[in-house]
Image 1 (tube, rainbow, N blue to C red):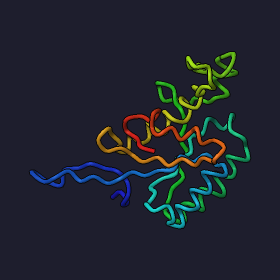
Image 2: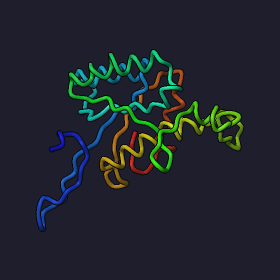
Image 3: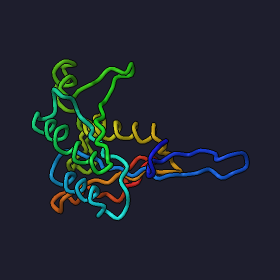
Image 4: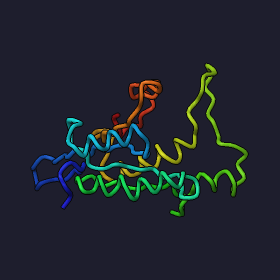
Length: 178
């Protein structure tokens, strides 16, 4: 059995309607904003149930060791005691092998982190964020029932000095709402 709150679609029986359950997650990075949101979710103060906190690890050789320790030893156990698993997700190669940011830069000899430049000349999204975080979380969401019709909700914590990240969903994948 899946616990309430996880999105799933299933036919209850011949001729019966499809049952839809919502998948609501926190994009968890181990920082101040996402930790505050995780604590509020654990206290039931977000206004909706959270099913999972998703930590997209760019690699044990790439993340700050103290961030990994905090996520694994403090935040994860705390959230699990409140019924919210912190799931550690990783980018993978096409054959399923782990791929890390360090490996991309040092082993594959990529000269720098690729940046997609926009025609207006303003700072652009880093493709490493897309590859190592957005796509990794998206793969988890789709594997757990998110579709164009039944979108998952992904909560992100941002501070007022980074309000530009709240883009109103313009960059959001079609299977997700933020």
